[in-house]
Amino acid sequence: MGREGDIELVSIEYHGDVALVRLNRGKTNAINLGLTQKLRETLKEVQKTSKSLILCSSNDKFFSIGWDIPELYYLDREGFAEFYRAFTGLQVDLYTLPMPTIAAVTGHAVAGGCILALCCDYRYIADGKKLMGLNEVKLGVPIPYPVDCILRSIVGTRLARTITDFGEFYLPEESLKMGIVDCVTQLEEVVPLCEEKATVLGALPEKARVAIKRDRTEPVERQILQHLEEKEKIFLECWFSREARIMLEEQMKKF
Image (cartoon, rainbow, N blue to C red):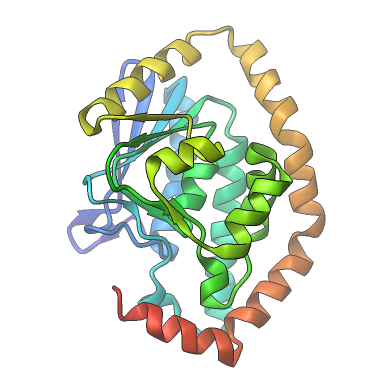
């Protein structure tokens, strides 16, 4: 599941103790089951080889457009549930990874792409017209529960309410003001600055930094796991509702 034809869905570059994990599924890095599973495998691999991780894209147009709706739309309930559970697992895996993680957002990171970025510890974004946001409500579905909890822990309940209720996309400076990202910089500086920060964080005493991150993520993870099954049922009911089907059909035209 790690390849599509001759293309590796995820690549890893090692820069010292920093692993650069690049999404490499076409121009948009649309998320399907194969990409999700490969990312989960990659997270396990880098834990054995590196001290910190940078999640980035193989192109500067899209960090990720989000879910591959034209593919996922046609899955039956069992097939979609398999994808949804894998993507839920990916969110938890990335959020709780016991090493520093930084999203280098050099292109649009919307919907599922924004979710991946939010699961990292830090987010650096290129200036200009790079968009971030969670537009799930405009597709007739709720925000996946793991990132709903994660977002509230990052920006607070009030801002999370605005971000999720309206489903808008935000330019870099707006994202910075809201606390969605930590840094806005020039495109060519994004990855180098992430590498610099990842190197500094990875060099800190391991037991201490792992414990600090665990203390931050553990309460959120506990909340996620406690309600995961019931939230999945709600999401699936929404996904297969007639209202969502109509909205998803319209969204597919943009792919």
